[in-house]
Length: 114
Image (tube, rainbow, N blue to C red; front, side, top):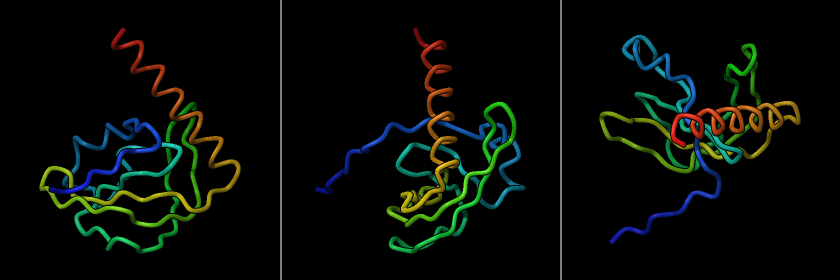
């Protein structure tokens, strides 16, 4: 029996528009929380790999999140191949931006499902 770790932070979906052209995109962030991101990738890195992160999100405008992370899990299912990356270091601006993204998406989801 495998042990399932509970997530410390809720996840919200981002970059949904990319799913339509998935065959043209090798890697992209599909969900984000204050603790990390899931990066969809055809070639996920091994657990424990440290990575430099730089990706854009749309809140009011396109904005860039930068920092460092560590691969904590790898998913090899055909429909969701990728890696869960925990943030290990973020700029203050990036952390504030992540908080805004998560809050905005959570409000939007709450409005859709009252």
